[in-house]
Amino acid sequence: MRRFSKQLCVVFTFVICAGSLVSFVDAAPPESRTKAFSTGAFDPFIDYINERVRQGWEDNEVEPSPVATDEEWLRRVHLDLIGRIPSAETVEQFIKDRDPAKRSKIIDKLLDDPAYVQNFTNVWTNLLIGRRTPRRVSRNGMQKFLREVFAKNRPWDEVVQDLVTAEGHFEENGAVNYLLAQMQNNDEAVQVTAATTRLFLGIQVQCTQCHNHPFNDWKQNQFWEYNSFFRQMRRINHRKTDPKTGRQIDDYSEVVATGFNGPVYYEKRSGLMQVAYPIFEDVKVDPASGVERRKEFSKLIVKGEKPLIATAIVNRMWGYFMGYGFTRPVDDMGPHNPASHPELLNRMAEELVKKDYDLKQLARWICNSEAYNLTSQYGRKNEFDSPERGETPLFSHMYVKNMTAEQLYDSLIVATGAHKSGQSNWERAEEQRRRWMRQFMVAFDNDSGDDSTTFNGTIPQALMMMNGELTKNAISADRGSYLNQLLLEKGNDQAKIRKMFLSTLSRYPDRREITSAQKLVGGSRNKLAAYQDLYWALLNSNEFVFNH
Image (cartoon, rainbow, N blue to C red; front, side, top):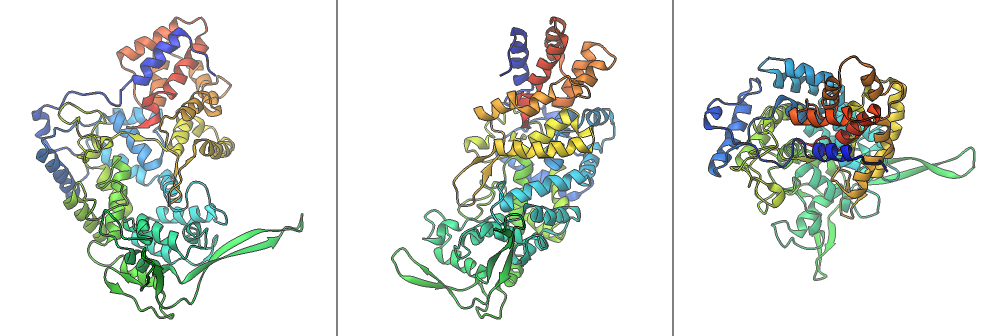
């Protein structure tokens, strides 16, 4: 456990509250809002997004927060697009850049960064198979498939069709692992049905497998109609002999097609048996064995100008970037759960279809929007825009988001300069990264088997941040470490403190912060220990561990 000096307690308490994530800011004066906001992107559809969100502000008599500073916004867009904070050098260059289109240009640059591929591969691997890899599922195969998806920016409709129709070896066709992850039990494709409708169609029908839903229009027969599309497949688990022990061990798994035909039988609460045929939105598919139902399903879900698959991914991506989707949760859409901005959601889905389901274009629209570029601090005229308290989101300020464990780990690596230390260190970091994930993992018993690995400030997580191996390594003064290099550089304490703030919080300290930090360093008999204390406090501050 790290010891606290009186001076450290003062600095730590201050830094934890620095740039308070819940504080008020003065509302922007009316004249500052007469000129339309722009990141410099020339796309009329971004203007449309801004108009619709602004209409929501006017209708609810809300005055939006000011536009975020370059430093705050740059940190946010790096975390969201490539999964880690920007380097100190990147922040310095961005602050100095006077190009009025610099925000739109950095968005384009990050979308072309290999780290974008890695980040969204991680996001979707966790969504499709979970962070705890199920038995007989190849995480490498799933990631290989998704890396190609995001590297080539494949159309999302094609990706979903590949996932729901996948067959074959779990390494040769990585898309198979999505289905294998849902086929852990012999449940007649119940989990596959629930996961597919939730992830790709944005609807939750899993509760209706036993009865009609009490609070919405989903009926029991609809669940089993969807389910009947997934009954023509089964998993085969192959084993091999271990040459060292002579015992049978797992080899590989695959999904193969079966000749299932006819209806699905299910039981109502009354005990009455019912039949369900493959039907999607009133379109009935021939139940004969010669018809490949999953392929027919994959065709039906992309039909129309605004299919559910388009609305679902727009809502999910908006929620990913903004902190909240147009519905809460993002995967429970329907008449029972109206969207906060239905016209905008529908129009974005239509435009995405016209753009051939281009997810980079979708991310570009959102990141260039005015709402995404606002500060996370709010004023007295928009304080009630608080979805965490159950209010409808108006997006009049950026909502604070918990960092995922992956974001937190990778940001610590960047803050400490470990990303510049060479390939061997990266390999060691990846091993440590996996251990970090396991420590942060908190499992919840639910139908989808989700894992919550966001940093949400629990005591075990806080203690791990304060005293964990990675943080201890980060503040060490060993040769080659960030602190060692910093202290060997020329310059006074103020210059070094400014660099520490820039590397961790992606901004320079204000006058009060620099004064407090200089008192800590200048008043200590052990200057190295004082710098370590300050660095430790910065890495454990709210401003560092949350995405705002």
